[in-house]
Length: 311
Image (cartoon, rainbow, N blue to C red; front, top):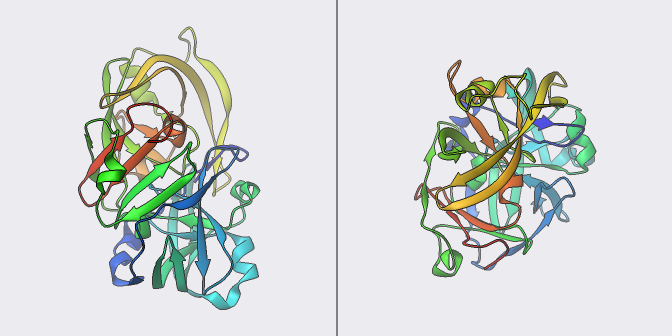
């Protein structure tokens, strides 16, 4: 979880818990194909309506790079009877490691689909609480499906496979792979240079490491490199960062000109499986905030709309 008071979200639980994802959380009810409402916070984070044990709608961040669904302290305190403690697990956050409790959720419903016995993280108090949400919807749920998110239209949906309507107006697909924790991985081009990336809808801002910056000829003393705020996460530790403006970020045939990106050597890059010194980029929701896109997890494809806005 990357939060910059609270500007950048990234809850990154990793492989040990992932091994239990399909052993728990049985899907009980299939969903309709119609889109569901999606809130977008001022910070840019996409929010889905989730219910626990038939509760009123709760607000969960849709996070493609969080391997596990997570519960914030406010929700655990408000609904203790809807979950019970089941153990503990290390959490690799953006700025370091911390050990947190795991929970078993009695019943979770989202986009018309219901899951029983889902294992979730009980997040500790952190700057993330300032976002005012109840939890995080992770890959243990969403990576089973094709996920459409229409950011300008404020709707989203999960389907077993992309429908013809979902793919209308899309550019040719970008190949993705899924790592052990079901985080989507792809290759982007920054100023014409290939950079390995992960797609993280729970990250407000896109961040690259210094290995990627050096690949593009940048150093901390390069013209245009500007000192920025410290990046913090669920561990509350901080990492220094800078920003730089690049000519173009390209994802397949989709292009974003004149993008300002953050550069920081966050511990989460290692937690995400990138080798020491390997160029890497966390593709945040800021790059996709003006368009519609479909992450076809089963088909391992990413579709982006031709133009900004909805279909």
